[in-house]
Image (cartoon, rainbow over all chains, first blue to last red; front, top):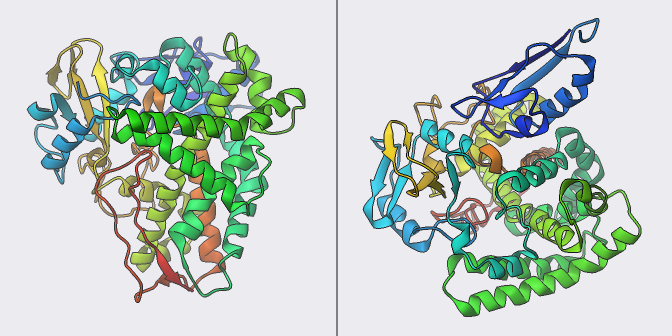
Length: 70
Length: 411
């Protein structure tokens, strides 16, 4: 299972995640990033890792449980 | 309005803010300054709000007011990311950020940063004394970015780097004198000369790509931007050089000053170097912008509320990030180095939001590596009490000369 968390305290609204993965991330009304989806497949993993790496604040954490995505 | 052609504040706004000179976040934290015709935004929360809503609720301060042809001539081309907006800016900015992802920067650290730092230290390590601003802080950034880009210049070619710095100084001089046609003309002349230094390599890499950043620009650019061409590669190369030079010097000089003037901080860092150096670098950056004025302008796209204060569409807002970086409502003991803050990177030195600094990771790594190596090789490094002490001007940030100098040391 792929899990994605966003540390709202760390998020500085750089919006790189939204640009990189607009189907997965969006901005809330306050300009912070949030997830548009809660379930991810293996096909999403590369994009998620890219967004995770792009975030200058390390606010996005992507983890994969044994067994991968649904 | 108080805008500036390159996106900084005008001399009028800067003078008004200088006279105001708050030492801490005032109340209210968002206040109208009549002589600047601008809102001053001073608290961490309010600055954070403006920056993360940049490009939506706010925009660059009147880039249209700048003579576009002049800015393009100074920057090397029309598509400088500093003036782009909307989708085009977002695509280019995000692409640039990928050049400096953590794993890329670690690769640069092995290939370029550590070797360059060692070479620079080699040049003065046997002398027992040095002036670190000139001999250590200044050379590092330009040499590292030249290596990353793939420019065919040796680290010891001081004449090349001095010439390039001279051109950049002339180009940036327009920041302080936007009405001066002579300064503009000199800047454009310098810009053309800098282009002539860079274009042979840019053209060579198009013909024969190598494993360097200029080659990567050629390879990837067409899929990012329509009509990507030589002018775009030149603009991107120029922006990387400009962004990686003075800022690295300032960050490193201020970090050194902090460590050399407070041995307690150095001792605390050295108790667990691997864990503490990165956090020290962040604290040093956060504190380096305090006690000077750093004013970042934006314009409201619509009527908004900033920290409960109504701001009208097209009003100029000027963020004093130096105050935000030491806001006691956000930072416990804000003027003290803490090596274990929960979010050590959440200061505003690299901006925030969609125009956050592209090269932040590279800058951080350079400062960290330089500090690790210089204190590792010269453990008795200390300020020379018989020489001129360090001094710092009160205005700067970004590309301004706002670092402590000189840094005469013995070891």
